[in-house]
Length: 361
Image 1 (cartoon, rainbow, N blue to C red):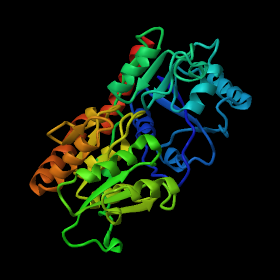
Image 2 (image 1 turned 135 degrees about the horizontal axis):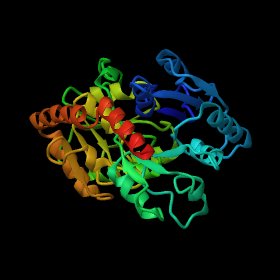
Image 3 (image 1 turned 60 degrees about the vertical axis):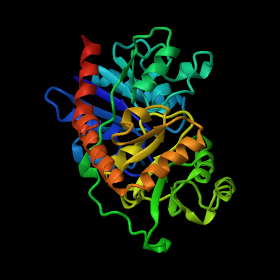
């Protein structure tokens, strides 16, 4: 099986451990499988691909639709006689789907979140609804359900959980001494880009329902001086107990140093990486029931799942974990075990290979 993967790589400001990229390396090691990648030459993943022996074809990939990128992909498809082309983000999907028109390759698109590709929107047909796409690999069953509801043919979507490896999370927890927290502080971390849909406003409203007084919230992501972030923090019950830390390269280690984690998004979720990172470090989570959150967190076993946009339910759930150290530790251990059993890198590689193989039969 010859696979051409197309992706716009991330910038060096972000963690290099991308499950989608690691799965490509896993596929490349399988007998009878060859993987080639087209990505931008400044991608942070370039050294990783080189170390794995994966050939890379560089292309700027700086526009959702770029004739030069379409020509580059099409030329590589013809040269390599590939069986499957795997398009891993929107830039790749738009350019790759057009490049494959008239060619025999099977085209697979990756979808990492719910919403935002409704069938009534013309732009959706430049993304996962493009008629040249043969299969959409969804990161969670909630995403699959949404994609199937938008597609005219409901058999083009399948779930493959992105796999994580515990080997990626061996660093020591972050040192939080710079925060000068009181000795009895209970730390709760929210790792997100703090866009409105990430639910920061809901979390701040939830603080008014806390029944445990010493909860300190660590906000990782977003600019600490962002007026919108500061406006939300000002509405917390105790603004001094909310600590905006901004963008950090040690976000997983901040989660590891926290007593537990929270993710209260209101929409457009997939399989939250921040929750997976917390699970890897044995941290229980409180999440809202949107996207794949309820698939990640087993309610009452590895954390607590609450309704979307319900500050009281969120505040009550946080208070339960904040007030019971033994419960946090028990759920955290179960979360780590759940990651190894249901969201491992090996499982993700095998499932992706199975999907590709079935598509070719």
